[in-house]
Length: 168
Image (cartoon, rainbow, N blue to C red; front, side):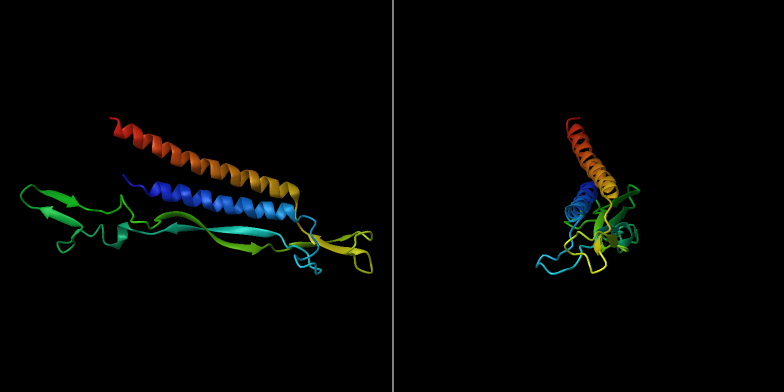
């Protein structure tokens, strides 16, 4: 049995947690017009991009059944092929899943609104604010939360199946 399903589910959970953290940061800074040091500068909305992880362990020689390959041995007496695929245990290398590729500043991350009463408004009464929609951020949070839960459910179901198989 291959155990890389835990790598896949775990990497998905990690990626979605980072996405939820980024969304929480966006919501927390929805009206931020100053930098952490107090200087003028609007917070720019952040987005997360993911990238798949796929290590093709099967095509690294494990499927090569040539006679000089120690991973596959043919017994001419019985006609059986003994295959040591080394796919079941991945030796600590994540062979599949997703990772956070980048946390980047969103395009059009700043909006200008007319608010002459705002302390950071310019001479004409306009102020730069983060272009963050609370509705969009909450939809993203719910989506990331559900994806996290789905990955956790996958890991739990595989654990249950493995326990059931050992009881047979």
